[in-house]
Length: 325
Image (cartoon, rainbow, N blue to C red; front, side, top):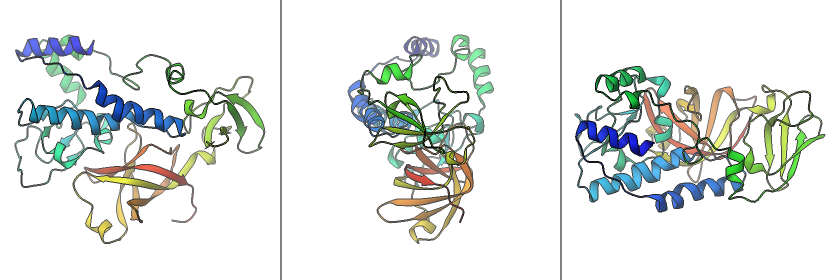
């Protein structure tokens, strides 16, 4: 369906439709990463890795080196300091990743691991447009089928398939127990921690109330679960993150080992929330939130913002709830 729509758009705009295959690159950099993360009890973000390695990695390199293009245009809801049509491009100046006009559709979280080199060669024409405006423009130009296409949900290569049935084709089940985090009582069994993520409804049969994943014991295949969606064990306000990717450059306050006031988010649907960022050793950082947030998850990415700019992101390594900030 995506291929057909792309061909339809190219035909309508009278431009060449060209098809290339990056499946090997995708397997090596995205799918293998996903399987390794789940096997280790982590919750990966394949969309961030796909943008880093494929769309803004292999694909950008192909366009620049093989097709001899000057700039690549994408349909992401994001922006850069070079402008929505690259009108402020300056090869001597660094480029900044900016949030778009349509904050509800903001996709900068998914772009937080891309490189400065790639970002310099990309423009985002939707930077100053809302989703409703984009659909209206598409319809006005005879692309009604594209405008009315349902939005994609979930992991692209899984689609509408059941996630657990899909992932068990690649990762061997490792049965374990669900244990109530308050009472220590076994309340059920599961087929592997890789099927579950923090905060998820466990749907344990025979229970009068719902249980939610609160903590994983990877070594012993134990899932500690909480009996309320707002249980205190599901909330955290501090975390350690590692392998920070600064899209532009490390903020001066960070380099000087000062506390850096900024914003944080780790889920696309959430808005950035105030936090403090403190540099540790070995490219690790301590993020301190001013208010606790639900279901922080090891393996996900902590994305850092300052005002309207996405500065970059780092992988969440561990987290906790502290009474002192």
